Length: 366
Ligand code: IPM
Ligand code: MG
Image 1: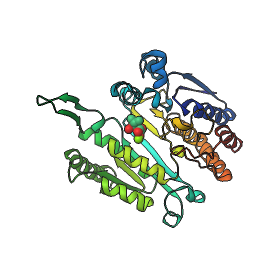
Image 2: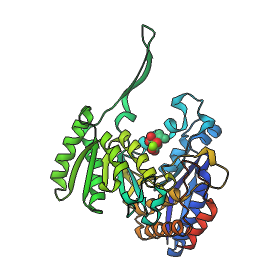
Image 3: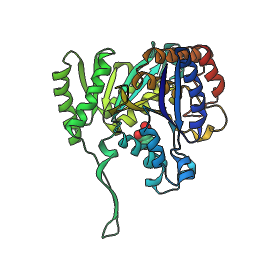
Image 4: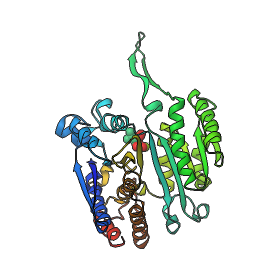
């Protein structure tokens, strides 16, 4: 009998709706193997502001520290948008939790089944076999965290805001290592995305990528691409990529583009892996859908739960080493989505999904 100890942080708007059904699916998938789920729920984001006065309470951090992984929902929304920027859920909870647990590697699979190419805004002839790529985004460095970061009123009355983009070679190397592992398990191709024609951090990024791959994985095919070109190429021919590795902000933007090119942000899962290891010797990680809280459809029972369910599958794979069950869940999602053609799209509030029915359809196919 194995017990999986993890923290559950549902968050705001559709967060709790999709989390509830994801936990049901997780239970149904693990029970036959004699696995017990031992999870503790905690507030994060807007609900934590309402209940505790801060977006990331110490009590929530403690629950996460005592766990082997974090299953995260999504946070933020209109209710808290009038707070000062630094107190808003995204900046006051999501970024600090990533930093606190050193979750430097964000893996976002971009997957579109070939039977569902209609869901993509791309013409089917451009993606006849669907899409299968992965974005490996650096998550704890770059312009999100660099100092100084400030807004100042100047002597002449003008206002100046500063963000600073900083990268160390060691930070680039450790994310490359994750990209290399991912590429080895796939087709062996890595595209490193940067802006080396303008940014110093990107010059270092490109040089480090070239040297590191040559030294540690010379069998892999490494290419480099400027981020503006990468954005264009993603819309033109996404399958020219296999593993994309890039810095924090570029990865934020490219992965959203990848999500919509793959048909729906409601299908986009993610794993954020840290430097820390859990009691199984696997990476401690945070697993979250990439689609956001979708306030416009919250409370209606129509949010697509697939991204949350697929994120739970990633948790089984990376933090608990349960690849078989993860694959089972992924296959069940694929079947359920195809059988019902229930792609939906939480980003645009397309109302083709019934959250509970979707989860039920997945459970039946496990
Ligand atoms: C994401 C989100 C976050 C980010 C926001 C909400 C801070 O867009 O996870 O992609 O920019 O990292
Ligand atoms: Mg984003």
